Image (cartoon, rainbow, N blue to C red; front, side, top):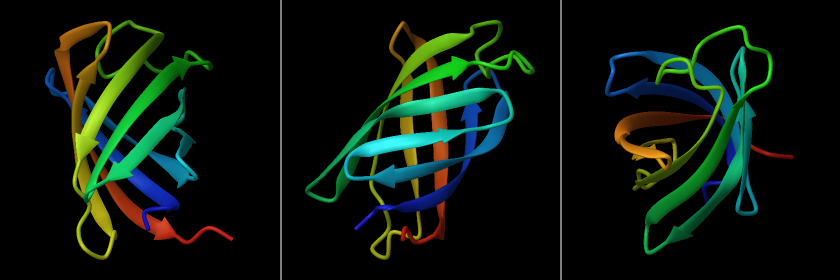
Length: 112
């Protein structure tokens, strides 16, 4: 089961990156970093995970890893390791598919 609190590391194809946290729970994703909020959904099927995440720069402290964009959506997919301790999702910005992203999720805590 992949439901847990994860630390996340992300990098774009423009070589910008960052760190944050995300909770995966009952098909939903909740997370953020020091400037952005991440809200979305995920599905797990046949050992693969797909996710669709809305990213909103609600604090305007930092630019996004894609430049001066305050709101965008991501489509991501990947395969967790057998213990669901960590996995990498690859994807792109829905509004501009040439903007690519890689996200490493590392399990930090179980959910209550």
